[in-house]
Every structure is written in structure tokens, then in C-alpha cells.
Image (cartoon, rainbow, N blue to C red; front, side, top):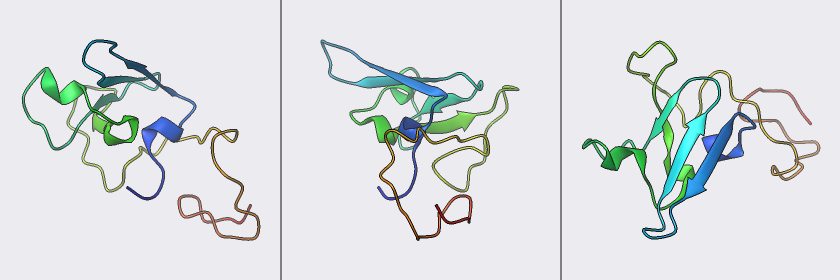
Length: 96
């Protein structure tokens, strides 16, 4: 997958189950993270890759109709994102 993901955000945290090897994510902004390709609960809340979990329910409990892999409150963790000097940031539009 290309672009930013919740796994790149400072507000998201992930844990990996030592028995199944699957990841579960949490967002401190209140979004529920799940695998959009799985519709059965609780299986949808686990994924084999961190970047496979995206916001599906907003902080108010409504379905989150997303147009990209991250929410509007996405804040990249600058330590984990490679520097893109002189290039336009695809999410925010300004150069770095």
C-alpha cells in the first residue's frame, strides 16, 4: 500500500498477539481501527499488517466514510517518516 497509514500516526498504537501474530490497533483520537476487507466481528479488528488497519468508525460511533487510509486528524510521526526534502507532501500539500 502506498501513502500514509494509521501506523505512521503519533495518535495510533498497535500490539501484536504473540499466539496468532495478528495486530490490533487503537487510536487516541477515538477512531475505531479495523481491516476494511473483513466484515465479521471481532475478526475485523485484527490484521496481519499494521498498515492494513484503517479508521472505520468515527469518535461519535458513526460509520467513517473514508476517502484515504487516514483520518483528517492524522499527524505523522516525523521519526518514522523518511525525509522528503524539496518534494510536495501528498497529504498536506506543502513542501518539507
